[in-house]
Figure: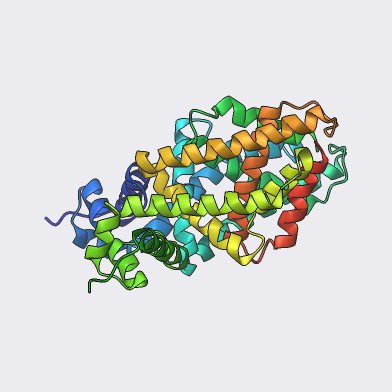
Length: 194
Length: 194
């Protein structure tokens, strides 16, 4: 009797394998061959699911973003304005093992996106979504009278998002210089000033 | 008569070629073969000057940092405290073509450093220098009464440096969303709050 293959399940397995290889060995090492090996399949199987390396990498990035969004939706359920923004920004920092892996995946994509318009386009779409959410929560906070200052909300949005990526990067690159508790304090101090 | 080779000059040529290849094609594409071709030399010549790809990349990074330091030293000559800090932070943003190339080089190194302890170590040493300079200028500014707030200078330093890298990255990744003038305004607004 032929074995029945659950294609969605196998696709998820392959993406999880890609995620593990990128985070552990770097994006350069994440060849289709290495990903197939990690998942315990042949190169041929991989080719059934993904056209090329970039397609696997993009799918891994999207899968990671989907997981982040689902986790965040649970965290901010019922909250809005500044309280939800606070959760969102902290959730985007590498404050535990899971989010450290997510951040490593993001950083790996940054440099590759600079050399590939296809990756860059996906990065931009995903980043635009995050920006719209942050901008929306800031508008809610202002409408609710939660903000003291009258700074441009566009500028505040860009400032906070740049800070998230800069701090995340620095924790990964300079672990002896910054600790998770420093990141959290520096981020929250910026929210307190709004 | 045998040709006399100026080794320092040739080394500089090879590093400039490496810089061009990384910025144009990405760090993945910067193989020893591609760099030798860009410089117009054989692979054999390259091997005389550098042990491996990482050594070339590290040398290119150090050369870029040296150029940045020299340029900055000219810009801040005679200045100190907040005025010098302002120059330093703006000089580290990709506000013209030259600094955009420098930023591309930096971003290319970030993800590679996460996978290579040797690269990471150099990154850390270079970053520590920059942090010490920023921290020193903030202390000067405070001593001169130029700062209104009493924030921890360590936290201010980390905040400003994270912002520099985050904003620089976002300008490169999201050129349709941020302009150079936005970066400058957002950065200077943070200095004005100190």
